[in-house]
Length: 490
Image 1 (cartoon, rainbow, N blue to C red):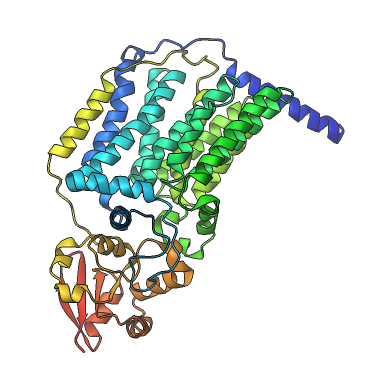
Image 2: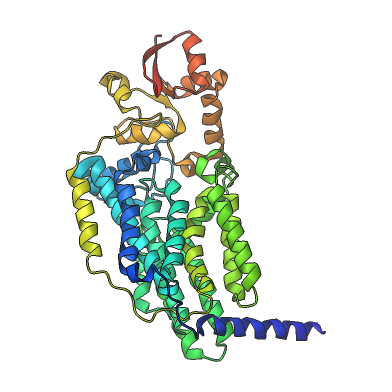
């Protein structure tokens, strides 16, 4: 077979696969749970939202603190910072506060009802995200399989359910993906109005860049399927241009913000930041189980999987293996792309199962969360009781702190040595901080001299703690089971 013939054959198969992807003829097989589809479609998002509303897990990350600090600064100054206003080690250094809108929303929720208000905000986001996912799952699948798909997605996402901007972006990612898939299913371009999602997304979280990649992929898929339909291609082009304009022109940083995600992803220091680690067994067993299931599904249906969607699934899998945080993309986008493959050729339900009591139930959940006092559970990143013991004259002095403790310090108005903004501190400083945490007393002494450090807060299990207990010129001021505070005596 000649190369041209082989290429032509692949092209024809690709176009046929994309035509077949939407041409489903038979109907849903009877399912004992289908009689309860309406209840299940609403109950699953409510269950996940309830877990978020009352779980202590969402505050297990110190970054929540500096996001709150940034939001307070933005509201107080009626501006988005372009330089570091917080640390005593990098004052004035250029900083892209690309999540400013999420930070303002977080502060608004915090001022409404403290930690409980913040939990209510993220519970609302979770309910909306899983409403979108459940709606698509029950549209494509019999109830028992829809429950399995949504439940598995919840299991993948729950470890990443933290009170940070990325969780608010879940809703936009799900909505954007559904809009693109619906457009392809109906052989049309997305509505221009949908491009306005980028106005919010680009100011909320850097994952909006992935949204552009998705739109480009589905536009290319449409081109392969309909190479002569200029009107359709023109509408896809107009949609993409409108989305680009929304992201570039309605953000504080303009087009330069497009480069930010790529600059961060190239940092060497990501290797020592937990969420950027590789996905491993046994830490990520559910992810690898889903990956194995996806491989089996693709192996069985590879002839009918549109090539670009197969490429997307492979890309999502590779991203999630390399960096655990991308399991979120794998879960949300992956399940929406896989749903038609799981339907075994059944035509999607043309109507949506409407659950009129769902949003009132969500409102009730939010109201309960706001009304019930939230009992914050302290841990090593948030030793708030211990920090409250530090006199004001010491709090105003330069401090040494561990990476994850910087956020709470910012939240309390204390200028940190380092916090979760590794993109601003850079590779060298982040690695240096990690070495000190592990007990490099020489580097610690150098930074004490360089930055005039007068006190230190260290996690109870840090290697630096026993070194400071023996270090001349330092004494232990206070400690508990989470952390210890040391002050200089000379």
